Length: 305
Image (tube, rainbow, N blue to C red; front, side):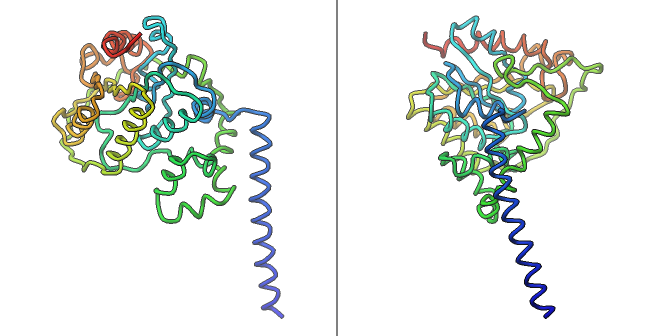
């Protein structure tokens, strides 16, 4: 008798979990029909469904905080959107590039990378793309499933796929911010105390074969679509090694695909002026204005009117 009671309890729990999973999926779809996704998702949704600019910038927070689209538009006469997303890496950039091409072909994609972008590491916050699993984006499906062996099975659950969205919704109502208000650019404030310069650590990390493959995928995607791909490296307030294995690898890849590489990583005036930074890796809004002005001049030789 106890055995049957136990089986009944287990079955009841399973049914409740399945029901909760289905209900959450229904609730998520209902919410998104009436409201836009908040926070980072607002930008992801824009890139995947609405972006129609001539120039689209893809990158992590270093891209978001470094390039001001309005200044680029005013100078080059081409529309521009800063599609940088916080704490993302090159697998995410490839997913976004492929998703954009589902509805729009920009004239140029600017890939804003960190100096050490190709080193071995995790995949960043690629799980932000969980809600788009099995939505017709091959690159997203493959990137999410490649994280580990169990991911493909976990992604079958609505509870798992949508948990990042509900966390963002709650965070949005606590502290809302506009990711699209300045064409995707988000200016960092000038800090009360300037960052201290970080010397080179001498740490050596292996180059990621997976990230090299994602870089190649982006290059091939743009080549096949007739998109001008440009790699840009924003400044940081720390010493980096231009002879590191990962940076040499990046330069070789750019040369192989004939991709312009605009490297401002150790450029003046940034490397000697901490007042232009919010922290060691991100420019503040004053630094971004100077950076964008410099970048426009460096960009002009590669832009066809």
